[in-house]
Image (cartoon, rainbow, N blue to C red; front, side, top):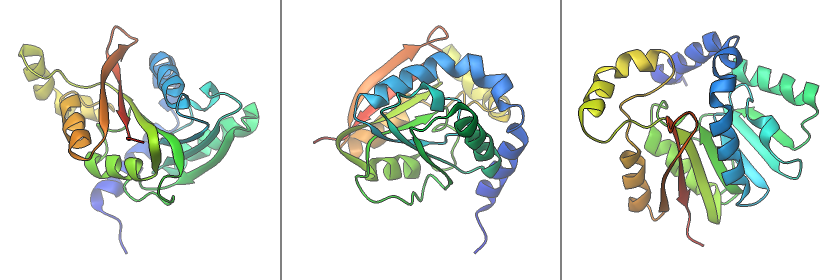
Length: 212
């Protein structure tokens, strides 16, 4: 069965990005990624990172965690596997090519799920959130870190106008956190208000808690 055209395009795009991704994003995203890792580890040791990419955040986890990573791009994952091997990251238990809207894990498999710089770019954000919630145990949290667009005002209008350009370089400027919050409250998850992180609040951490 042929994969959807938007999925094929994403694979192709990330295949092009893979060789230079670390150079462009490593230092820019590190503080926010570290904050997201700390937030998801607070739920327990068994963690799923959706959209693990080249594995930039894998070294931020505690050795006692049990981290499983998935990504749509085999090219990205190949670089993540090299990091695991060369750095001896034994807490990383698996890295698999997988569509975030069709996770090959049983219900309630993880204490925490995180997606870093991903949710505003996937073709089906709500489908991705539904799968993350499905594999999360009761009492656990989904931890998202991303740039979210302003909700209203002049800056919001400018972000919407710039959406096509920002999407071309890997960001979404007009995706609002309220879209995720509406989905979460409509599906029984508790929302922790977004918390700004470096640089200067450009990225925000959004936590969705699954009731125990």
